[in-house]
Image 1 (tube, rainbow, N blue to C red):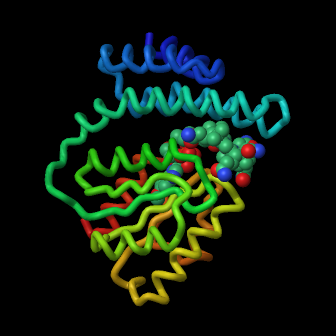
Image 2 (cartoon, helix red, strand yellow):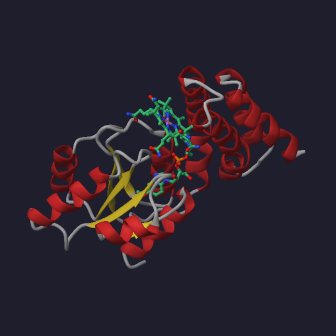
Image 3 (cartoon, rainbow, N blue to C red):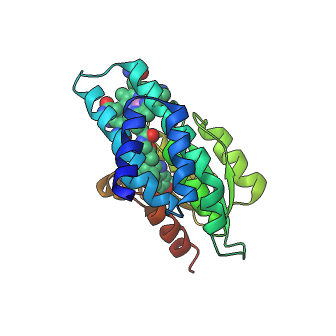
Length: 215
Ligand code: B1M
């Protein structure tokens, strides 16, 4: 039953059909399917298929854009359910979240934000393509505990390091923990830039954030 639904979810992303992806997301909620499972076993399978086809030259930018839109619409439809399932009520810490400068990929970043909020963190989601100076200003403004940065391009990963360097220069590095993620981010990169935490996915990101807060 769910397997069939997950297949349709993947196909809706491959087709770039937002109406269908939202309808399937709503069906999953009605059937009491875990929204994270719907995302990882359904929609993400589709977006990865399109991503691979794009990398191999078998799909073009408009297909990538439409797949992204359909994926975003589905995740947005699932967000209230994800928030509802988060049980923790105590505020665990303040997180400034952004996709780094030059990078407009937002789906994974937003998913991480939703999961952190649902788990009890106060999340200041600055959106995508956020300049280092703006991230630093927000950290100071809200007295953040954690800076969480997403990068989906090998060319923008360097901005994660830039933010760490500026935090260091401004004397904030000891006070503010840094966690990074995004498809091209590896453990080797995390060590090189001396970030405090890394996770491959949104669920793992919550565990990492809790560890960084000593919870
Ligand atoms: Co782009 N794109 N894209 N794209 N795109 C990739 C990333 C790419 C791998 C595709 C490919 O070639 N196979 C490739 C990057 C190659 C590289 O540098 N290594 C690529 C490219 C090249 C580009 C453009 C340059 C294409 C062009 O214009 N010629 C362009 C760049 C624009 C820019 O940013 N300046 C571009 C544009 C786009 C769209 C706008 C069309 C669209 C994004 C739409 C949107 O976000 N609103 C898009 C999409 C959809 C993709 C793919 C297909 C899917 C990304 C996605 O949403 N995945 C992607 C290929 C792929 O990854 N399979 C691709 C689903 C999402 C749930 O996963 O974002 O990985 P992800 O997030 C995960 C984890 O990574 C992790 O948790 C999330 C949930 O599990 N995570 C964190 C993420 N952030 C985290 C932070 C954390 C912890 C965990 O802590 C802080």
